[in-house]
Length: 300
Image 1 (cartoon, rainbow, N blue to C red):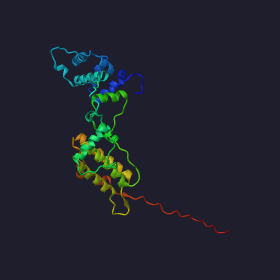
Image 2 (cartoon, rainbow, N blue to C red):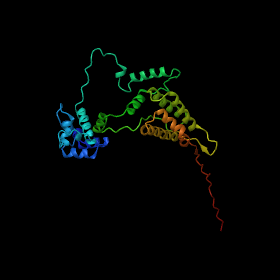
Image 3 (tube, rainbow, N blue to C red):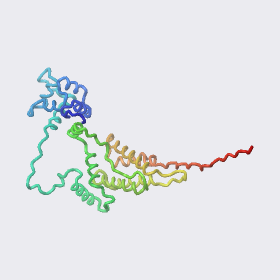
Image 4 (tube, rainbow, N blue to C red):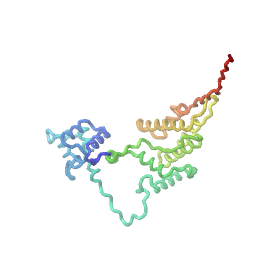
């Protein structure tokens, strides 16, 4: 955030958090009426040993103290969540002290996307696909693993809070760099091959359906049209079509809860999206040759 006010004491941070959670509107009104306008004021609302229900009784004083159902509403649920996450963010738990015995790096405790994790995934890949050949040209880098592993993981409440407080935008999707001009087939084969191999490394997709999808995409993108007035799509057009395909796959996985392999088959086989997106384009019409017109004047 650009303001000099600390984010914990910024009312807009609390409002943004409630908006991200899609919290009920009456919760924000009650918090404002009771004077809880910032995340810090919520975190310090009750003592450390206090119960979240004490905070709820302050917001919604019960008419009957013996009636426990009054604190079982969507608004009270979000209020509990807000209190717990705010206290955990301001008072993070201290890490366990290091012991002398932990001198060797443990692959399970290695950070996501580290070289140790990448080597572990590579060994597991070779065990699952004994006939696969890995080379520096078709093996994803550690940075690619980090991109997929971090952006594919669902964000929990602490990460959402930290993104809001630090002003870090949420990533939309995992992206990889690629050429935008040049030969179509080599660039697409390398890009799609790295993507399929990375998904197989992470265990999100079996290598066989991934290779089948890749070959279908490449064959459709590089097919020579029978009509001489048409041309196959350029590299930039093929990359744009690839974005549309993966957006449709992500939509099926998010909205319909499909697996990645089922979504690949739905897009490439059932819906026939590849021929429509990678259809032949008309060739550019060449300009007619320029002819200079000469005007002769009749002598007088």
